[in-house]
Image 1: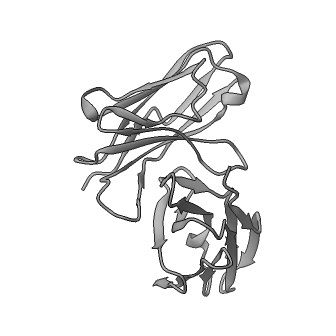
Image 2: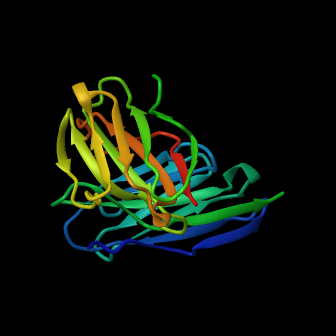
Length: 112
Length: 115
C-alpha cells in the first residue's frame, strides 16, 4: 500500500495571506505527482502534473515544487482569496501500477 | 469540450437497498475510473476500464459492488445491498490514455448517504 500524506489537514487564513501545503510520497518508483483543487459540489480540477525532480510550476497565484529524491511536493498560494477556498489533493503515480494514489487532502478556508 | 457527466448528484437510500450511478466520460477517452471518497479520506480507486475491459478492480468489494462499461463509453456502478459504510462521494474520471503523465478529468461526483 502506497503512503501519500498531506499536511495540514485543514487551514483557515485571512484574505491576502500567503500559505503553503505539503504532500509526502514514496521516494522510490516515482512516475508523476498530480495536484488537484476540489471545490464543494464541483469536479476536482487538475492544477499541476509534475514529473521531474526540481520541477516548479506556476498558475496565477498558485505554484508548486517537487523533490522526488526526498519524496515531497509543496503547493503555495500567494495572496489567498475567498475563491481559493477548496480542498487541495495531491496524487502520486508510481512506475509499476501507473494509477493515482491520493492523499487525504488539505482543506483551505479563506476568510474575507 | 464537454466534461465528465455523472448522475444522480445526490442519493439517499436505506441500508440493504440497491443503488446505481451513471457516468458519461469525455468523448474519445478510452480509460474510465470509478473512485470512492469517504469523508476525511482521499479518493480511492475502485475500478479502472480500458475501453470496455477491466484493467484494475483490486479494490472493488465484489460481493456488493459491480460495474460495467458497455460499448466502451458510458459506465454504471452498482451497489447491492448497500451498507452504512458505503456513504461516500463516488467520482468518475476519464483519460485519453495518451498523456504519459496519466492526467485524469473528473466528474462532479454522486454523494451517497446510506441510512
